[in-house]
Length: 325
Image 1 (cartoon, helix red, strand yellow):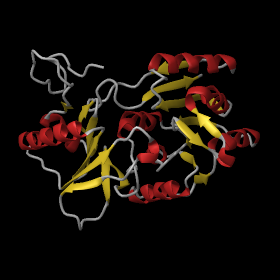
Image 2 (image 1 turned 180 degrees about the vertical axis):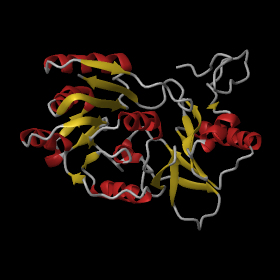
Image 3 (image 1 turned 90 degrees about the vertical axis):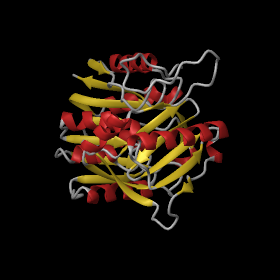
Image 4 (image 1 turned 180 degrees about the horizontal axis):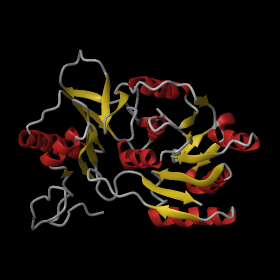
């Protein structure tokens, strides 16, 4: 993966070097930072590199790193970038990215006031989302889904099914456009945080269901009840264990999930497929989605979202919209 860009790139190009060296971080420009702020978005990336990245979360930043070299490089770069942009975070948190999920830890305060609360509220195009820096490895909002949340709002669905819903950011996006929604996640705590996101946006929870259960168990139940949807979000973890310890891995089980979702799809249904599995690149994901649609005798258009300016190639999830007909 090569992060340097052409001269007309929106990213800041590093200075050329005659010696091979680790790829330096790619930073958004101060002008792009200002554009995010002016459009009501206070949650986005500031920098990305193969060994780490920096996220802006309101007045704070979280620096995620795979090793001490990346940590030192990003901290030094952040100091220079903030001097140029004239914006300085209130707090800097660091988060180590281990090889094994079992070794994950919550972010650690590097600098700033330790008495400030670890909960905060960020905005995305004016939509408010609550974050909890102390909640664990994930603070509550996947920043790489920003364009897909905007896409969902533009579709103005009437009935949304949000599986693996986490803190329900897609649900909020659809509800703001008047949709009735169903959010499913194994974690009741995550769904409760989703309800809090509804409250942050002055949305009532009537006509919205929050179901703490296994998505793979519920999809056939929805089908037998003749429940159908015109928008379905499929953003599963790469690996998980469901009810009764059932092992599930998207690389091997994608077709089962997608086929079950297609059975719930109304005509003109939009299905979002999203994954962080590195073995499911955009071409492979689309090929397997096409095979599922064919097996269910459905036709579809396939749309790959426009890349985000703060996520260089190789960063963020692989996503695909299936626009069923």
